[in-house]
Length: 231
Image 1 (cartoon, rainbow, N blue to C red):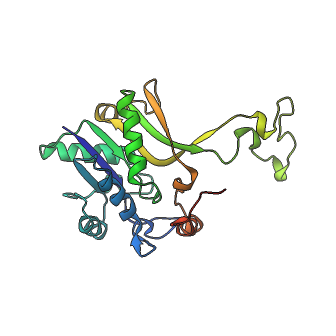
Image 2 (cartoon, rainbow, N blue to C red):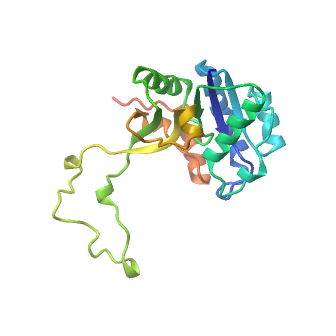
């Protein structure tokens, strides 16, 4: 038994071509997450789940365990990441390796570091959790958002029966996509990742950039190495 980290990195991307191996500050994107996982010292196996031999070779070069490629069933645009994770667990089981916990670490969160993973795992252990998911402070409260009406009408956009001052709304958090930890039994049974024994790990916004397109990529590049401490 033990811990496995799964880094899902299928080839291709509609938003940004070959995003997962695109060079960020001279390093393939997925390598940042791989190094964070290895640097945490928590995992008996760090696996990059990919359908690409090229991606797999890059991952192995930087220390990942990639004894098999992702099945084509789980490699398309509509493929479910959790189904791909379950495929990984089944393949390792065939090879005689079983894991008690599984962490899914998306390569699109390059500013998440080893310390973030360690802190999330500490919460997992201290609270005897079924799952821990990373969140960060939300940029805007839900009450400041709504659908637009016909012809982009703002009629009814705000509910003025509630106090919409920012100070009165309290704190809101959003899933940032950086760290998902769960018991293997929960993963394989398709259990509720957000159930009664699920807890949040609150990450800094400066570590929470999630790369989906070219703008996000530029934001991550600009943020790297920047000192976010303000006096």
